[in-house]
Image (cartoon, rainbow, N blue to C red; front, side):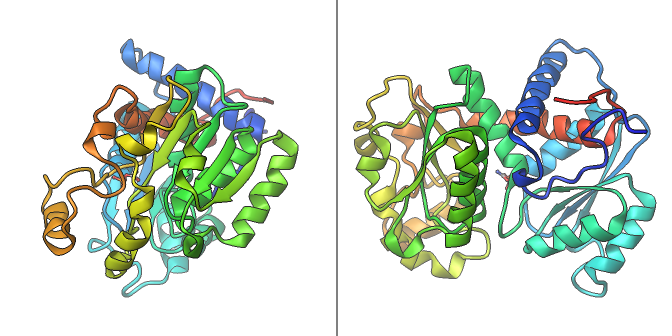
Length: 338
Ligand code: CP
């Protein structure tokens, strides 16, 4: 019989876990962070093999799963889009059967939520969603851990997401805030408001936690009472063809010195899942500057490098939280209840 309520469970969405379970996972990640800082071994996954499937590029998610696996005593194997047959010569179902017979756990970053769900259904091993078109649940564990580290709590914190309502990070932030009792506002243009189904789900979950979940088209009104300002790229991966439209729609929502001057809480923090387009020091951003005449997109350097910025701590927390979910769902921990 399993001695952990987490054993064998997939993380496809934060909805897969209750509020108490998510809070426990964040607390466990804090513990693992402390062990790591003190060089204390924590080999909960000794001898396990972990498949890291990436259909899309990644820095943080790949690095976090790789280092987390190694710190836990497991062996990670990176299987990139051009390395395996998935999506070209082989179906997700067949890939799930094969990988599940060789690996103990599978991370999947890809284009479709249905694919991570199929992997979970057919592989027979634990599956973790490393980002799909709909959700980014491992990002959420790190984001809410970072908020808790700063404010010492989650309940009652006001989180404002200045960004388009129709992407995976927004969906996951809205849902996870609702579960955890965090008051959530999405500041977005009217034409990019969240999927009504996601909004309805979040509002339903919020009834239980006491969180408020709302959407506004007014960026100033959205930030005034914020404790946390979160933003994200204006065009998600795969949306690059819509760039001109997004620049025009999203410019009023840019997180810059003027916008954040309206925040009342002097102790507010800035978060970003990264990568961010905050200057023209990358080839991609320089191309954007030449085409659109803008030197920053969703956030400007005066915020990105300000004392309020916590995005690099948030990035580090990807590793600690991914370690927590991997160890909890695949390791032999004793967690009979939370
Ligand atoms: N935040 C995030 O998912 O980063 P990567 O795309 O670098 O993995």
